[in-house]
Amino acid sequence: MAKLVRDRIPDLFGGSARPLNPPDFRAALREKLREETEEYLEAGDVQELADVLEVVYALAALDGLTPADLEVLRAGKAEARGAFLRRLWWEG
Image (cartoon, rainbow, N blue to C red):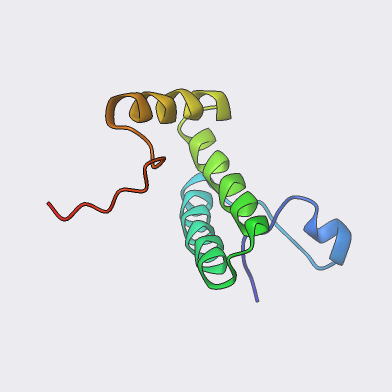
């Protein structure tokens, strides 16, 4: 089954791999985000959250953002709209 994998997977497990062009890489990352998110939702394993974060960082990098840049955006939204600390369920 062909799919986007982490850089060291071919070295660790064999097989062949090739780099994707930028549009295909972005599409593959978006699909990988869906895959990793579904794995977390199904298993509830926090290791899957680390995979989700790795994919998010790769997507952000395509838009020229570092993890620190992404954190600034996250913190700004948290400051403006709050986070999820109060566990609110809105029935607006």
